[in-house]
Amino acid sequence: MTKRKGIGVWLVALMSLVVLAGCNGTTAENAELKGQIDELQGTLSKTEAERDELKVDVDRLMTSLSQAEGTLDDVSGTRDQLAEQVSELQKSREALDARVDDLAEARVALQSKVEELNGDKTQLLQRVDALTESRGELQQMVENLVDTRGLLEKQIASLSTARDAALTDAKAAQSKIEQLSTKLKVQTQQMASLQDQIVSIRSVLSQLQEKLE
Image (cartoon, rainbow, N blue to C red):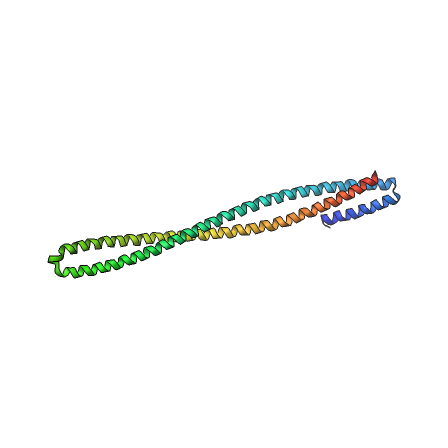
């Protein structure tokens, strides 16, 4: 028999004793009734203590739930920021790719022009030297841009990893919130049930005390 069923049996028995005592109460019956009242008062005190402990657990769970929700908000904010940074870096990489393609085309055009000018080295030597220098500068710019693109790709990969980690943390926080919410609901229901039992016990005690008086 569970604790709740035991309390229910006590209530039924005491109600029966109240009825018998009201009809033809004797000293022995009153003494027995008083003993039952004392025992029921002890049960009431124990039940109230359990209710207080359960209330502490509920408060602690509420605090944990608030903390978990705050963690979820922080993780969600970080995830959004990382997603925005990844998007911006993706756009920058695309712009650099276009720039590299343009410079590569320019380099090809310059190379063709240099080859044409080399046909008359005596007259166009200075022009060839200038264009060759420009070609070297453009080559250096292309190499620098390629290096920059490689760095951006590494940064995008790193940010993507961080974003995936943030998503994993968000899922874990959401799971914890759901578990805490379920536990909180169960313990709240238990506390409400114990409160109803306390009200019933106090009502019976009040009736018994009136009978004894």
